[in-house]
Image (cartoon, rainbow, N blue to C red; front, side, top):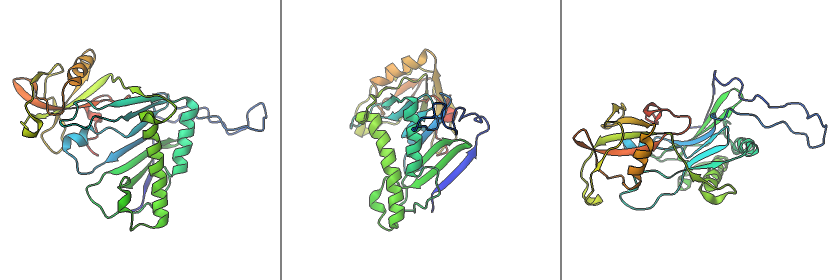
Length: 288
């Protein structure tokens, strides 16, 4: 399989590159360069996420993008989490703020790494492994490049040298962003404060490996919510307003095996902070 590189026209973004200058600046200096494009603040300029793979339906529905960069410079990613079982109830979502110049340079780096090109990246002989998708906002819409099993370097033995080199460029680019977002760059990340949270619920089942769990009263909208229409018995409610803080405070001391009591029943809840371009449960990655 070759890289899938598609350009999708986005009718609502005809003015994305409002201030891209193709002519020299007025001062006529030797270092004249085109001005950096001005993106709407809430536009997704770059997103790197995973598609598919052998994970539970709840994990598939609530999986966060590896990196999302917005026009106003916010770069949101999932930070490190404690290696314990059961895992913490809340993901560690971090936000790093970039300036306009850094966003423009990031777009240039993405293109230099191969995002938006049609290079043949090959297909490693593995199954049940996520595909990495790169989405970049260009002048005519969103350009996507997908790479199968990008994180499995050990599976690339049968690929050509050109294919391996092209994959490594994309891998190094993605790694540089996640390293920067976890404190490896010049900007310092801080906790992301969502204005809405999707709570994906399924019937709670006792798990001997998780040990005894204390029931917690659910502080959000009544569970289980509306069906997600995915594999498994999943439903979802969107938490907004004052309840967001109540739910996050309760979840901060819970874990992935905590039974949440609502409507006389116990539920397992997987929390997904919604990103700035997401509004409700309908925006979850249920089709990925």
